[in-house]
Amino acid sequence: MTKRSNVVSSNQSGIHKDLEQIVKKHLSHPYKKPYREFSEDIFHQVDEIQKKVNKPIILDSGCGTGESSFNLVKIYPDNLIIGIDKSEKRLDKLIKDKTVYHEDNLILVRADIVDIWRLTKKTNWNIKKHYLLYPNPWPKKDQLKRRWQGHPIFPEMVGLSDQIELRTNWQIYAEEFKFALDIVTNKKTSIDNVDIKDFISPFEKKYYESGHELYRVVLN
Ligand SMILES: C[S@@+](CC[C@H](N)C(=O)[O-])C[C@H]1O[C@@H](n2cnc3c(N)ncnc32)[C@H](O)[C@@H]1O
Figure 1: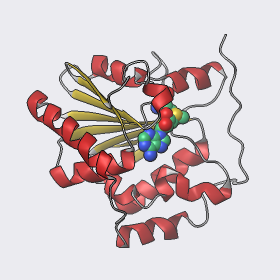
Figure 2: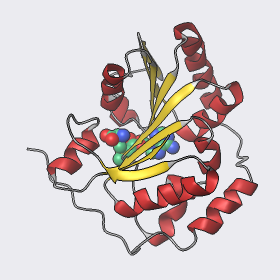
Figure 3: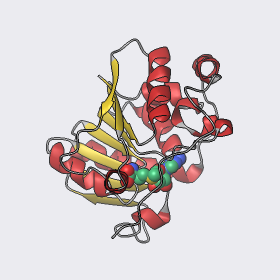
Figure 4: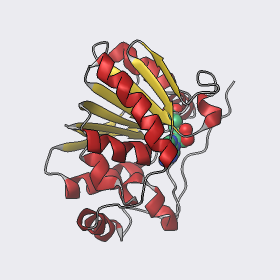
C-alpha cells in the first residue's frame, strides 16, 4: 500500500496579502532571465518533432513520471501531448541517456519548464490546452514566489494557451491561482472539485487515496 500523504499545512490562512501587488509587478516587468543554452538545444529538438507531427499541442508541465501525459494521449487522441519535467529521477523509466522521448502523439522532455515556456512563446506553438497537475505547493508564506502564481513567468505562461487547467490538493493554491489569472486575463475562470473517474496522475491518485480534497482551476 502506498504511504498516505499529509494534507498541506501552512502559516497562510487565505490568499497571500502580497499576491496582487506581485502579479501586477510581473505584468509590467516581463521576465528577462536568459535561457540556458542546453534548454535551447532541447527546445529545438522538440520543435522539429512538433513541426512534423503538426497537431495542436496539449502541454503537461511538471509531468513527473510522464504517466499523466500517457493518460492525456488517450483523452486527446487528435493532439500532440508534450510532457515536461526537470527531474531525472521521475522521467528515468522512459528517458535514459537522452533528454527527449518521442512516440506517435507523445513527446516527453527532461527540461526546465520555465525555459521551455519562454522559448515556446518565441515560436508560437499552437497550444490548445495547458495542464499544470499538482505542482509542489510551497505552502510557507515566504515561499509565495516559488508558486506559479507568484513567479515572474506567470503572465507569460498564461499567454501561451487559450485554456489552462491547474489541479492541486491545497485550496489556497487554487484560490491564489484563480486570483492571479483574473488579474492577468479577462477570460472566464472557475474553481471546482476534481471529479475522479480515472486518476490522471500519480499524485492525484496518492492524494485521493489519502482522503484529500482535490481542486481544479480552469481557464476557458
Ligand atoms: C508534485 S510533482 C507532480 C508530478 C505530476 N504532475 C503528478 O501529478 O503526478 C511536481 C513536479 O513538477 C516538477 N517541476 C517543478 N518545477 C519544475 C521546473 N521548473 N521545470 C520542470 N519541472 C518542474 C518536479 O520535478 C515534479 O516532478
